[in-house]
Image 1 (cartoon, rainbow, N blue to C red):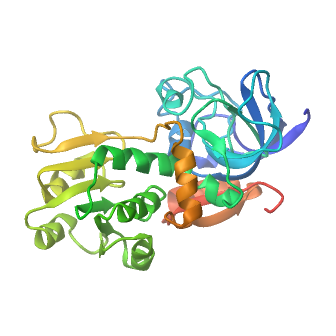
Image 2: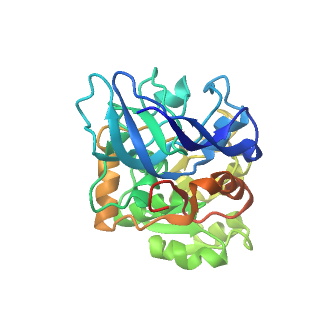
Length: 339
């Protein structure tokens, strides 16, 4: 398939202001790769980290650069040697656009080069565990909202080894990862305390939170000390910078666990607690992880997490609003005919 396609494009590093919708060449799959007609794509903070240039050494970009990792769509062409997928298969997953080094290695083969999802077509590695078949009952927009958030949530819960009845504080429960972490913790029968503004309280309770603390009007550390004088069993941090974790982590019981998903991670030796199990995690895909998340979404264990929806023509605006406005759940760009 030759010709051009519409895509969100950056011609150099910068803020979302450098993004524009342009006509560029349709990418073709090489050996071991598939071409996908994208139906929906989701925004993630790492899209903007890559775009900014802050990670240029670990994850260099080629320009013109199409952002976006999380996607759902249909296979339109398969490269030589591909047996896992066939033309016409509905798929979803994630990949890091033209990124090499440790970033892409977490999600696919270290040598993989994929094109961005904010486009009508994308190319991905067919054997990457972060790409899989999409069940017919899972809508494309819901599927696109799952990969990075869901894989990060699974990594956090595996590290935390949360048991039924344990108390877990989730800081930043309204975002994309929180929209998966909270229901997964609820399904594991944990007692979930979530931070959220008053306008989002009903939302996080629907996700499965048992208690909600308004972090906008309440001193979180003081409120946790009041409610849980002996501390909670575990904490999942999805929002606070490392500089604030020292204070808030006093609300974890002795021998408890702190699972962090924010970067940069706390530096060794800077934390005053030596009794905590601490880990900073991101969402590396294991074989079967996306299938697990899809099954949970179809079953209803994971509620829909689509916050705002945009057309491809509004993709640059979506990234600007991702930075400038409060986000509940995932921001989705509808690319296909339904857009």
